[in-house]
Structure formats: structure tokens, C-alpha cells
Amino acid sequence: MNYGKSIAAVVAALLSAAVAAMTGDAVISAVEWVNVAIAGTGAAAVFAAPNVPGARFTKSVLAVLSAVLMLLTSVITDGITSTEWMQLALAALGALGVYAAPYARVQSAAVLRQG
Image (cartoon, rainbow, N blue to C red; front, side, top):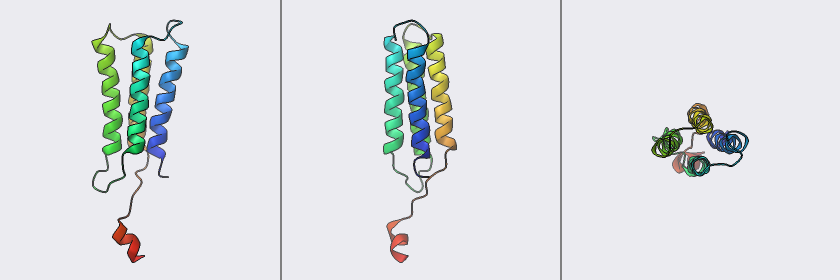
């Protein structure tokens, strides 16, 4: 499966948006929106990152960096709310999911030409 890592990142981003919409106050806060945007951008980065031999952990590192950005956003602002804690937990689980998903091994063009 070539898209397992991307699917894990997208699911985490969608769940982060769902948590923001269904928990906390009636209005989604600016920080919660920023966290959703970071999660979505992280999912796009995981999808766009190539499967490069020798760079096996690129997608996992991108997912972890997205989770860290969400943490920094929440900490730097007015403190971490319960909704933001849930978003952070989902980001961490998403990063673990990206790491755990099978790595799509890409053969080089030379190997493909040899048949």
C-alpha cells in the first residue's frame, strides 16, 4: 500500500477538525483553527514527501514536526484547553500512525529497466 502514511495523516487531521467542532465552547477558537490548519498542512506534506530510498523516516519526521507546531501554538497562546489537548493527542497518534504504516519501497529506474 503506497498511501498508508498519507491516510494516517489525513485521518488525524480530520479527527482534529471534528474534535474542535464537537468539544469545548460553541465557537471554535482561533488556536483550534490554527491547529486544524497545521494538521492539514502536515497531512499534505506527508502526502507530497517522496518515498526516497535512504530517507525512510521523512514522512514520520514531517508528521512529528506538525505535532510539535501544534503544541507550540497552544503553549504560546493562552494555555492549553481540553480541546487542544485532544487535538495534540490526535496529532501524536497521527505521527505514530505515519511511523507505523508500511514504508512504500520505491525501486530505482535502473532496477525497473533491468526487469
